Image (cartoon, rainbow, N blue to C red):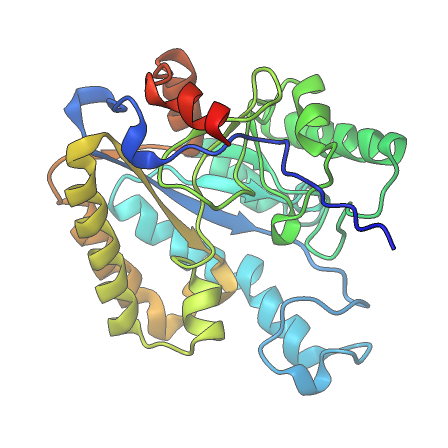
Length: 304
């Protein structure tokens, strides 16, 4: 039997210790952004759940209602917290939100938020689509968001961070310039698709992973956010780092968690050397000031 080993051709290996240092605006050491997931879920299909016992039922009031708390209540509580600190969200936006919750689009436009394409809804993945199907799907998602927000998305994150091997190239055809799906670095890096970059996101510094997956408490969340920033700040002596805080309004927007998001953001906003920004601005700055290769990198590749 022949075993075919597939290599990752989307991007090259790069050890962070070998790179030319990244410099952020204002000599900041850590670029911080809030990745706010604003999503729509289909009522008759399973999705992210808090209780597996009913997740396959149709309808599933327990889990669907938990998710639906986000656009109805949790989003607005989270928005007020961001407003207190003057933080612009990087919104990971399902295009179906534009139809189902236009009030959210209105609020985000008033705050000049950054809008990233995040698929049609968080129940639909394009993993099994053909090339032509995915091209049409992505064009519809991007076009719908542009019409609703007045701004063409620059970035992409797939529902559940899903892609096909064609996704980055198809996104480049649509004029997008970066993805968040590959959560493998503390710095942006170029993909092997002309004009496309990866910007750091996090599946660990993520309210679903922390509160739902690990059932941690609010004080645990604050400590983790502080520890993440402190370590990235220390690391950034060798070049700028990125800190993404991934939030979902149906999780972080619960009433008993509100004070802990406030405490965590207070620490970040008042920490020295932090650039409070969006993923759009991180990608744009990196692309305009992309560090060149070190002399050691071509040698490492040749030795491999």
